[in-house]
Length: 315
Image (cartoon, rainbow, N blue to C red; front, side, top):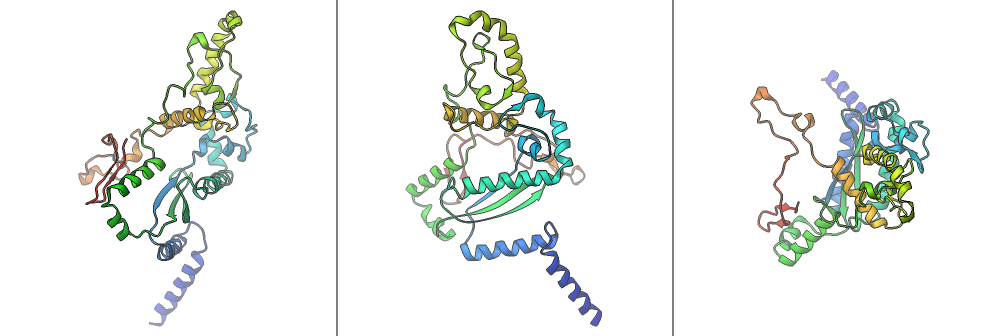
């Protein structure tokens, strides 16, 4: 019994020390303990959220990695190819971690604590890395209310409460672009209206190409080819690489909506890949299906079933 006692003591010491080593199995166990303590203190969390920064498309990450960039005046050629950006990011893990920390901290300060989801009383997040090493955050959020599951079960029987709950969920979760697409969002890129745009990349250039002067039709015609080449080059740039719209610029609301539409249509519409089937095993006779459960049936209006508490948002 003595050898086993000594071994158990050693393992306990390793567990105690390992709990303070970030990324270790023991540290994850320690985090679970802290989450359980928070649940005991605050109740069940209200929202589970994943923040996954696009590090290989971020000029800020490239800047931290030592690439010489003027973040206010980004040039097309400075952004390089996606492969080259990925190579730089992979070679500078500290710079990438610094970028993720900066972005996540600002999101937490301005959006989570700032009240986009409504008043909150606590949050708890943990960072993990994907297979290629990029970092992302999983976060639990406690909204500032004292409603227990039993209270929710009772209140959801009330039709007025269900409508308010649907309105809240539809406000913070978007599964379609209908609200962002309107006739004021996009400016036409028709050849007859194109004017030469500066080579500096900005969302203002992409979404608000100015109309030509009526008295300079010849100049516009002569410059149309080079202008179209410029706009075509810009259209090839991944939208995540572009600066965010300036809140002080004219028509910011329309430009912001256009920004959302292009980001979603380029980067946030599901396309099947090996990741969808990474748990699929043909040798076990598994049915090959997307683990993201895509494609999904479109729903014209949100549904909350008071009997099963099944939530289904419109899409």
